[in-house]
Length: 227
Image (cartoon, rainbow, N blue to C red; front, side):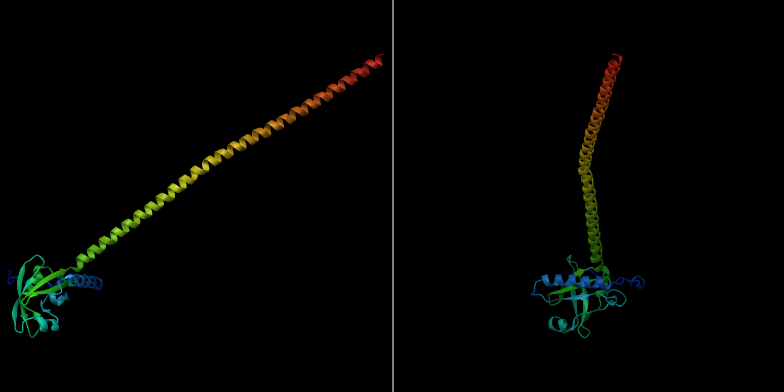
């Protein structure tokens, strides 16, 4: 069992103040843990405030719980943490709270404002104490948010990649069409060009034929006039 008589007063300038969100998150988690405990042992959830973990180190307990379950006179009560380490704290009946010994437990377990504790009475003078740390919940939430942001970034990158690939594929689909269209236009031009060339040749041949016929008629006239 541990002794805490040598602890000095905490530096009040280094107090940590929990946000409402962290405080509520710790209480919710503590209540979930409490609901999973064996129902045969009475329990309660106690959120930590500044007066519980700094300065006077006084821990008030639920009045009705004390009247129903705790000794009827001042007694030392054992506090056992999740690791099985134990310490003693003085329970004061008239004030329904823990005094001497609680200070050492709070310091040794580095309790801060916003933490939530589950006290389970496992025997008439012994509590099993479960600690839910508010700032660990905050760190986990930050990690979860970072993971969500990372997933969203990856999704956006995948989306951009897919859009880029679709654009490339679309360009590849258009290119053969452009090549086919170019071939068709070229073929059409060649056909039209051949047609025009043929028309020009026919026209030239026709002119040559007309000239030849004129020459023949002129020749005949000349011969006739000589006779």
